[in-house]
Length: 102
Image 1: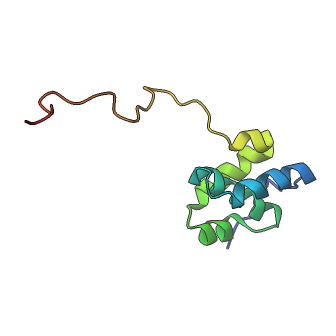
Image 2 (image 1 turned 90 degrees about the horizontal axis):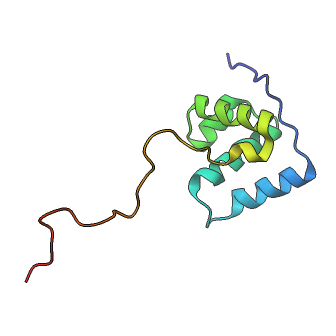
């Protein structure tokens, strides 16, 4: 039996506009589009299990973004600083022994 989320999402007109733009903008990173789709579906009253199945996500992922949006609104969907060494892309240089061949 699916559980009902305690985090009921109600969007303001401005929040809905921002999320719809993100959800339909194919030049954004995929994670931003998916997060917007999760919140738009939640605002329509869909259960976490249904959203997860529709978007091919884990229920825990849907629950995480729903909860974060509930407390932090649109700003909560952005990336937060991560602990540890920062990602490096593109690689900083060639590895030893990979010079140009003549």
